Length: 489
Image 1 (cartoon, rainbow, N blue to C red):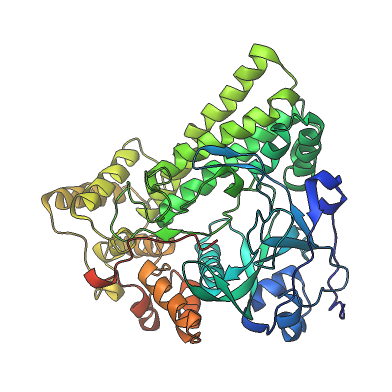
Image 2 (cartoon, rainbow, N blue to C red):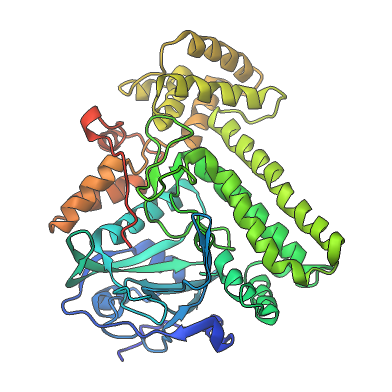
């Protein structure tokens, strides 16, 4: 044990019955070395700045911060549609929870910290590439305004892990609103343990949805609330061109955060059928499939909660069906609202959805870059500072669309300067380009962190198109394109 560095640990999840978790002390490593420390996040959590000086020890598993109580959480899950009744934290341990200065509760978890009772013969470790990918992409998502888990630290272990090749190991410290997943409910429902499902639901309501504590039907209210957050979350993914890659039920957090960055990627050329994940052989989790998959996952949550609805039988089924079917409308509203902003529109008109869809169709027809095309609208609106990047494709369809869009923008208050500012505020110039990410991770695995650090700094300022940022904006050249991403488990 070591000094506490003023971490005021709490352990609300560990206070749940033992079947919800198992003790899981981290396994020490041979030569821990701090790779990255998130100073801003540490400040948001109210952590002692001196923690950074001990992060290599405390967040590698070599020493436990005073008061930490490491546990591995139990959960099940549908993986690519196939139910696995026991998964759980196979390479992670929850150290505990902290209350941030603003009163929000956060989990602090080590990922890659060694085997646990749920490891299923795995080594419980992580390679440096997947650790830094999650650090990098989760920070980018936070900067883009997408609800997400965050990374507090990344620590090299000085040891190697064997995957398809021998790779340097690392441990990620992940911060989350909680680690409760749809699969957490499925774990108990599959065992017929309705009391545990109720206990977990009460815990989630208390932690994430306290406004429904006294609702007439609190468990139906919980389902509706989770669905609404997922609708907003997935809409925000599509608005930045993000593809999660493994939307299994064990990777859907009921808090409404993006969690578990495995073979995730961002669109370059706009293609709604795009898949990057090497394990998604049938396109189940393609870019455009993410909304219906989220709805499918929510139906699995409804199955778990159904026995606890106030109304049972056919009436209860009708309530569950209504909550799940409402997702489509909730998602549609969030999707359209976000894409209106991306077109620079501050008001609503009847033809806006067709305007959005026709723009996307024009991009798809010529495989135009998703991010740069939306950003190029600022150029079309008169922004002189972005001219060096590719213009919108010159096609009859795009020319006709631009005429419609300009006519629509004429109905907005303010002039062209206001329109440009709205467009630049809604459309990132910099995203974690897949080829940039892969190059940075490859360099880091070889011992060079400079590309990772440069890319991290850039994606933390996604709306900044200053000259220093412009090297990170460009779409990949033909030989740079990343065609597949890998889970790295």
